[in-house]
Image 1 (cartoon, rainbow, N blue to C red):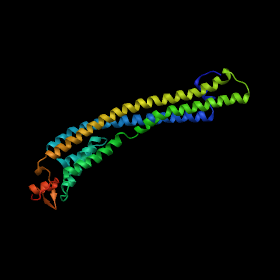
Image 2 (image 1 turned 45 degrees about the vertical axis):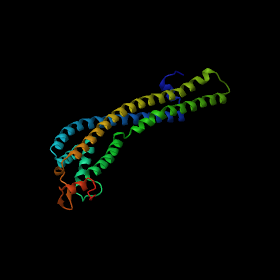
Image 3 (image 1 turned 120 degrees about the horizontal axis):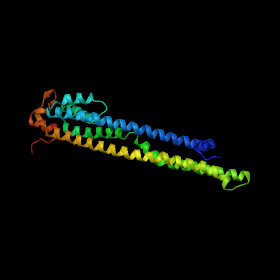
Amino acid sequence: MNFNLRDIYNHMGVFALGIAWTLMLFAVASLAVFFERLFVFFRSRATSRAFAARAGQLLMQHQHEALVKEAEGTKGSHLAVLLGGGMKAFLAKSKQPAGKLGPVELTRRELVRINDRVSADVRRGMSLLATVGSVAPFVGLLGTVVGIIEAFAGIAKEGSGGLGAVSAGIAEALVVTALGLLVAIPAVLMFNFLSTRADALQLSLDAARSELMDHLEDMPADKRGGVNNGAVATGPETVARREGLDVRPA
């Protein structure tokens, strides 16, 4: 028998072929996740840069409704999802009757929830890469162990042994281990690369969320345009209640 990959593949048993095709499916899935995440990250980066420039001008001009519309019209940007959702929540809370928590604090909490959803979307599919990187070597090792068992079982059945009798079976078994490593190593590298990108994106989103909260907290009361029970609320006590402050006499 010539030890080339085609001959080894043709002499593989059913179990070894199943292991090999499983590893190939792992490889295809890993590549699909990697390139899909790359596309999402690069698209989000490009669209977020353009949106950030427009959003900064709208915030300086206190055009909050325009910011929400701009965010809704920007597709593929995690920054637009975060800032648009936060500003939409702030405008909605400002028009509701004052409660124990003011619009700014409610917006802060809503931003945390939106950030959690965005973070989950950023890392979507990356768990598959981690799984392939950790499981693929063991799947290949399983194929090797079973292949060696089959090789020695053949020796026992024929009643004769020697290196020549088992070398072909062992070679077939070891090829499965090599295939497992060839699948696992790129998966680990792709996972680490995407994790670095995801961490950088998440850091930028956290900074943007903090800047939005600074803008809302520093914004003058007459720019908030809040409505309380159908009337424009601009009085100091109303504003204080909206922000969750205690205005009862001492």
